[in-house]
Length: 296
Image (cartoon, rainbow, N blue to C red; front, side, top):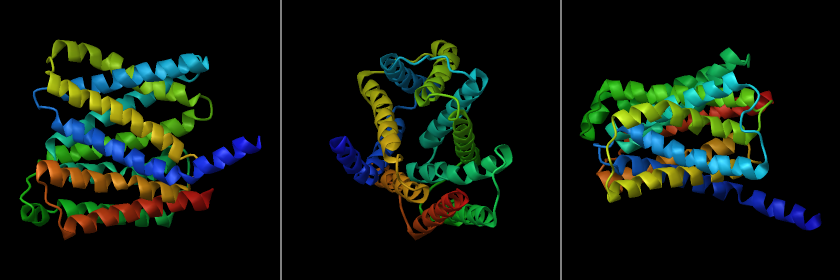
Protein backbone atom coordinates (compact mmCIF):
# COMPACT_ATOMS: atom_id res chain seq x y z
CA UNK A 1 0.00 0.00 0.00
CA UNK A 2 2.87 2.34 0.84
CA UNK A 3 4.47 1.70 -2.54
CA UNK A 4 1.17 2.42 -4.31
CA UNK A 5 0.78 5.69 -2.38
CA UNK A 6 4.32 6.73 -3.32
CA UNK A 7 3.67 5.82 -6.96
CA UNK A 8 0.45 7.87 -7.03
CA UNK A 9 2.23 10.84 -5.44
CA UNK A 10 5.01 10.61 -8.01
CA UNK A 11 2.42 10.40 -10.82
CA UNK A 12 0.59 13.48 -9.50
CA UNK A 13 3.84 15.46 -9.58
CA UNK A 14 3.97 14.92 -13.33
CA UNK A 15 0.40 16.16 -13.94
CA UNK A 16 1.66 19.48 -15.30
CA UNK A 17 3.90 17.70 -17.79
CA UNK A 18 0.98 15.49 -18.81
CA UNK A 19 -1.07 18.59 -19.65
CA UNK A 20 1.84 20.04 -21.60
CA UNK A 21 2.01 16.82 -23.61
CA UNK A 22 -1.78 16.91 -24.08
CA UNK A 23 -1.57 20.44 -25.51
CA UNK A 24 1.30 19.37 -27.77
CA UNK A 25 -0.57 16.35 -29.13
CA UNK A 26 -3.80 18.29 -29.69
CA UNK A 27 -1.82 20.94 -31.57
CA UNK A 28 -0.21 18.21 -33.70
CA UNK A 29 -3.73 16.96 -34.46
CA UNK A 30 -4.65 20.41 -35.82
CA UNK A 31 -1.42 20.41 -37.83
CA UNK A 32 -2.43 17.11 -39.42
CA UNK A 33 -5.90 18.46 -40.27
CA UNK A 34 -4.32 21.52 -41.87
CA UNK A 35 -1.94 19.36 -43.95
CA UNK A 36 -4.54 17.02 -45.43
CA UNK A 37 -5.27 18.03 -49.02
CA UNK A 38 -8.54 19.96 -49.41
CA UNK A 39 -9.83 17.38 -51.88
CA UNK A 40 -10.54 15.13 -48.86
CA UNK A 41 -13.91 16.24 -47.39
CA UNK A 42 -13.90 17.45 -43.79
CA UNK A 43 -16.67 15.01 -42.86
CA UNK A 44 -14.48 12.15 -44.06
CA UNK A 45 -11.68 13.33 -41.76
CA UNK A 46 -14.07 13.53 -38.80
CA UNK A 47 -15.38 10.05 -39.64
CA UNK A 48 -11.91 8.48 -39.69
CA UNK A 49 -10.98 10.24 -36.47
CA UNK A 50 -14.19 9.01 -34.79
CA UNK A 51 -13.83 5.46 -36.09
CA UNK A 52 -10.35 5.07 -34.64
CA UNK A 53 -11.44 6.56 -31.30
CA UNK A 54 -14.50 4.28 -31.21
CA UNK A 55 -12.44 1.13 -31.75
CA UNK A 56 -9.98 2.04 -28.99
CA UNK A 57 -12.76 2.98 -26.54
CA UNK A 58 -14.75 -0.23 -27.19
CA UNK A 59 -11.63 -2.28 -26.48
CA UNK A 60 -11.23 -0.50 -23.12
CA UNK A 61 -14.93 -1.03 -22.31
CA UNK A 62 -14.59 -4.73 -23.15
CA UNK A 63 -11.52 -5.08 -20.92
CA UNK A 64 -13.24 -3.27 -18.03
CA UNK A 65 -16.42 -5.35 -18.55
CA UNK A 66 -18.69 -2.30 -18.69
CA UNK A 67 -22.10 -2.21 -20.37
CA UNK A 68 -21.64 0.01 -23.46
CA UNK A 69 -25.29 1.10 -23.59
CA UNK A 70 -25.33 3.44 -20.60
CA UNK A 71 -28.34 4.58 -18.57
CA UNK A 72 -29.34 8.04 -19.79
CA UNK A 73 -29.17 7.23 -23.49
CA UNK A 74 -30.98 10.33 -24.73
CA UNK A 75 -28.47 12.60 -22.98
CA UNK A 76 -25.59 10.40 -24.13
CA UNK A 77 -26.77 10.74 -27.72
CA UNK A 78 -27.07 14.51 -27.27
CA UNK A 79 -23.47 14.57 -26.01
CA UNK A 80 -22.46 12.69 -29.16
CA UNK A 81 -24.33 15.11 -31.43
CA UNK A 82 -22.78 18.14 -29.72
CA UNK A 83 -19.29 16.64 -29.83
CA UNK A 84 -19.65 15.76 -33.51
CA UNK A 85 -20.94 19.24 -34.34
CA UNK A 86 -18.05 20.84 -32.45
CA UNK A 87 -15.46 18.67 -34.19
CA UNK A 88 -16.89 19.37 -37.66
CA UNK A 89 -16.87 23.12 -37.00
CA UNK A 90 -13.34 23.06 -35.59
CA UNK A 91 -12.01 21.08 -38.56
CA UNK A 92 -13.67 23.48 -41.03
CA UNK A 93 -12.20 26.45 -39.15
CA UNK A 94 -8.70 24.94 -39.15
CA UNK A 95 -8.86 24.30 -42.89
CA UNK A 96 -10.13 27.76 -43.82
CA UNK A 97 -8.39 30.03 -41.28
CA UNK A 98 -4.83 30.58 -40.05
CA UNK A 99 -4.02 27.85 -37.53
CA UNK A 100 -3.06 30.34 -34.82
CA UNK A 101 -6.32 32.31 -35.06
CA UNK A 102 -8.62 29.29 -35.28
CA UNK A 103 -6.94 27.82 -32.17
CA UNK A 104 -7.45 31.03 -30.16
CA UNK A 105 -11.15 31.11 -31.05
CA UNK A 106 -11.48 27.45 -30.12
CA UNK A 107 -10.12 28.23 -26.65
CA UNK A 108 -12.95 30.62 -25.83
CA UNK A 109 -14.99 27.54 -24.84
CA UNK A 110 -14.25 27.76 -21.05
CA UNK A 111 -16.05 31.11 -20.96
CA UNK A 112 -19.05 29.64 -22.78
CA UNK A 113 -19.04 26.68 -20.37
CA UNK A 114 -19.64 29.03 -17.44
CA UNK A 115 -22.44 30.80 -19.30
CA UNK A 116 -24.25 27.56 -20.18
CA UNK A 117 -23.62 26.10 -16.72
CA UNK A 118 -25.38 29.16 -15.30
CA UNK A 119 -28.32 28.78 -17.68
CA UNK A 120 -28.69 24.98 -17.77
CA UNK A 121 -27.25 23.83 -14.42
CA UNK A 122 -28.37 26.80 -12.32
CA UNK A 123 -24.82 27.72 -11.40
CA UNK A 124 -24.41 31.33 -10.31
CA UNK A 125 -23.38 33.81 -13.01
CA UNK A 126 -21.15 36.19 -11.06
CA UNK A 127 -19.59 39.54 -11.86
CA UNK A 128 -16.33 37.64 -12.40
CA UNK A 129 -17.88 35.76 -15.30
CA UNK A 130 -19.18 38.97 -16.88
CA UNK A 131 -15.70 40.49 -16.49
CA UNK A 132 -14.13 37.37 -18.04
CA UNK A 133 -16.56 37.52 -20.96
CA UNK A 134 -15.69 41.15 -21.66
CA UNK A 135 -11.95 40.46 -21.49
CA UNK A 136 -12.24 37.41 -23.73
CA UNK A 137 -14.27 39.21 -26.40
CA UNK A 138 -11.89 42.17 -26.26
CA UNK A 139 -9.03 39.77 -26.98
CA UNK A 140 -10.89 38.30 -29.96
CA UNK A 141 -11.61 41.80 -31.30
CA UNK A 142 -7.93 42.72 -31.00
CA UNK A 143 -7.03 39.66 -33.10
CA UNK A 144 -9.83 39.84 -35.67
CA UNK A 145 -10.15 43.59 -36.30
CA UNK A 146 -9.61 44.43 -40.01
CA UNK A 147 -6.54 46.63 -39.45
CA UNK A 148 -4.81 43.83 -37.52
CA UNK A 149 -5.59 41.29 -40.27
CA UNK A 150 -4.35 43.63 -42.98
CA UNK A 151 -1.05 44.07 -41.13
CA UNK A 152 -0.42 40.31 -41.24
CA UNK A 153 -1.79 40.02 -44.81
CA UNK A 154 -4.71 37.75 -43.88
CA UNK A 155 -8.25 37.75 -45.24
CA UNK A 156 -10.81 35.76 -43.27
CA UNK A 157 -14.37 35.15 -44.42
CA UNK A 158 -16.79 36.02 -41.63
CA UNK A 159 -18.50 32.68 -42.30
CA UNK A 160 -15.48 30.75 -41.01
CA UNK A 161 -15.19 33.00 -37.95
CA UNK A 162 -18.84 32.18 -37.17
CA UNK A 163 -18.16 28.46 -37.74
CA UNK A 164 -15.16 28.61 -35.36
CA UNK A 165 -17.27 30.24 -32.64
CA UNK A 166 -20.07 27.72 -33.24
CA UNK A 167 -17.49 24.98 -32.66
CA UNK A 168 -16.46 26.62 -29.39
CA UNK A 169 -20.10 26.91 -28.29
CA UNK A 170 -20.83 23.26 -29.15
CA UNK A 171 -17.69 22.24 -27.25
CA UNK A 172 -18.94 24.13 -24.19
CA UNK A 173 -22.40 22.56 -24.43
CA UNK A 174 -20.78 19.13 -24.77
CA UNK A 175 -18.75 19.76 -21.59
CA UNK A 176 -21.88 20.80 -19.69
CA UNK A 177 -23.63 17.63 -20.89
CA UNK A 178 -20.67 15.52 -19.78
CA UNK A 179 -20.80 17.17 -16.35
CA UNK A 180 -24.44 16.16 -16.01
CA UNK A 181 -23.77 12.62 -17.27
CA UNK A 182 -20.82 12.13 -14.93
CA UNK A 183 -23.21 11.58 -12.02
CA UNK A 184 -24.78 8.45 -13.57
CA UNK A 185 -22.50 7.13 -16.32
CA UNK A 186 -19.10 5.50 -16.52
CA UNK A 187 -16.57 7.88 -18.09
CA UNK A 188 -15.74 5.41 -20.88
CA UNK A 189 -19.42 5.10 -21.85
CA UNK A 190 -19.58 8.90 -22.11
CA UNK A 191 -16.45 8.87 -24.27
CA UNK A 192 -17.85 6.03 -26.39
CA UNK A 193 -21.05 7.81 -27.42
CA UNK A 194 -19.14 10.69 -29.04
CA UNK A 195 -17.40 8.64 -31.77
CA UNK A 196 -20.35 6.22 -31.92
CA UNK A 197 -22.86 8.93 -32.83
CA UNK A 198 -20.30 10.58 -35.09
CA UNK A 199 -19.52 7.38 -37.01
CA UNK A 200 -23.17 6.39 -37.47
CA UNK A 201 -24.39 9.82 -38.58
CA UNK A 202 -21.48 10.57 -40.91
CA UNK A 203 -21.16 7.13 -42.54
CA UNK A 204 -23.91 7.64 -45.22
CA UNK A 205 -22.59 11.09 -46.12
CA UNK A 206 -19.00 9.85 -46.30
CA UNK A 207 -19.98 6.89 -48.51
CA UNK A 208 -21.92 9.11 -50.93
CA UNK A 209 -19.10 11.68 -51.17
CA UNK A 210 -16.21 9.23 -50.79
CA UNK A 211 -12.74 10.38 -51.88
CA UNK A 212 -10.02 7.73 -51.68
CA UNK A 213 -6.99 9.14 -49.82
CA UNK A 214 -3.52 8.55 -51.19
CA UNK A 215 -0.72 7.21 -48.98
CA UNK A 216 0.45 10.69 -47.97
CA UNK A 217 -3.08 11.73 -46.99
CA UNK A 218 -3.59 8.46 -45.10
CA UNK A 219 -0.51 9.28 -43.03
CA UNK A 220 -1.95 12.66 -42.01
CA UNK A 221 -5.38 11.10 -41.35
CA UNK A 222 -3.80 8.45 -39.13
CA UNK A 223 -1.97 11.27 -37.33
CA UNK A 224 -5.31 12.98 -36.62
CA UNK A 225 -6.62 9.88 -34.85
CA UNK A 226 -3.37 9.04 -33.10
CA UNK A 227 -2.62 12.52 -31.74
CA UNK A 228 -6.24 13.03 -30.66
CA UNK A 229 -6.19 9.80 -28.66
CA UNK A 230 -2.82 10.64 -27.10
CA UNK A 231 -4.03 14.14 -26.26
CA UNK A 232 -7.18 12.82 -24.58
CA UNK A 233 -5.16 10.27 -22.59
CA UNK A 234 -2.63 12.78 -21.26
CA UNK A 235 -5.41 15.31 -20.60
CA UNK A 236 -7.37 12.81 -18.50
CA UNK A 237 -4.28 11.92 -16.45
CA UNK A 238 -3.19 15.53 -16.08
CA UNK A 239 -6.56 16.86 -14.92
CA UNK A 240 -6.77 14.32 -12.10
CA UNK A 241 -5.44 16.48 -9.25
CA UNK A 242 -4.70 19.94 -10.66
CA UNK A 243 -6.78 23.04 -9.84
CA UNK A 244 -8.97 24.20 -12.72
CA UNK A 245 -7.18 27.55 -13.06
CA UNK A 246 -3.74 25.97 -13.36
CA UNK A 247 -5.02 23.30 -15.73
CA UNK A 248 -6.72 25.83 -18.03
CA UNK A 249 -3.55 27.93 -18.14
CA UNK A 250 -1.41 24.94 -19.11
CA UNK A 251 -3.99 23.73 -21.66
CA UNK A 252 -3.76 27.15 -23.32
CA UNK A 253 -0.27 26.12 -24.43
CA UNK A 254 -2.06 24.65 -27.46
CA UNK A 255 -2.38 28.23 -28.72
CA UNK A 256 1.40 28.62 -28.41
CA UNK A 257 2.08 25.31 -30.15
CA UNK A 258 -0.50 26.08 -32.85
CA UNK A 259 1.11 29.47 -33.46
CA UNK A 260 4.54 27.84 -33.77
CA UNK A 261 3.24 25.32 -36.34
CA UNK A 262 1.51 28.15 -38.19
CA UNK A 263 4.77 30.08 -38.48
CA UNK A 264 6.94 27.07 -39.34
CA UNK A 265 4.68 25.24 -41.78
CA UNK A 266 2.27 27.85 -43.19
CA UNK A 267 4.27 31.11 -43.00
CA UNK A 268 1.73 32.73 -40.66
CA UNK A 269 2.71 36.03 -39.07
CA UNK A 270 2.56 36.50 -35.28
CA UNK A 271 2.68 40.13 -34.13
CA UNK A 272 2.08 42.12 -30.94
CA UNK A 273 -1.68 42.45 -31.51
CA UNK A 274 -2.08 38.69 -31.81
CA UNK A 275 -0.07 38.12 -28.63
CA UNK A 276 -2.06 40.77 -26.76
CA UNK A 277 -5.37 39.31 -27.92
CA UNK A 278 -4.31 35.77 -27.00
CA UNK A 279 -3.27 36.92 -23.51
CA UNK A 280 -6.65 38.62 -23.00
CA UNK A 281 -8.50 35.43 -23.99
CA UNK A 282 -6.25 33.46 -21.62
CA UNK A 283 -6.96 35.95 -18.81
CA UNK A 284 -10.69 35.57 -19.42
CA UNK A 285 -10.32 31.80 -19.15
CA UNK A 286 -8.36 32.08 -15.89
CA UNK A 287 -10.96 34.42 -14.36
CA UNK A 288 -13.72 32.00 -15.41
CA UNK A 289 -12.11 28.93 -13.83
CA UNK A 290 -11.16 30.90 -10.69
CA UNK A 291 -14.84 31.66 -10.25
CA UNK A 292 -15.60 27.94 -10.31
CA UNK A 293 -12.99 27.19 -7.65
CA UNK A 294 -14.33 29.86 -5.31
CA UNK A 295 -17.82 28.49 -5.74
CA UNK A 296 -16.77 24.99 -4.77
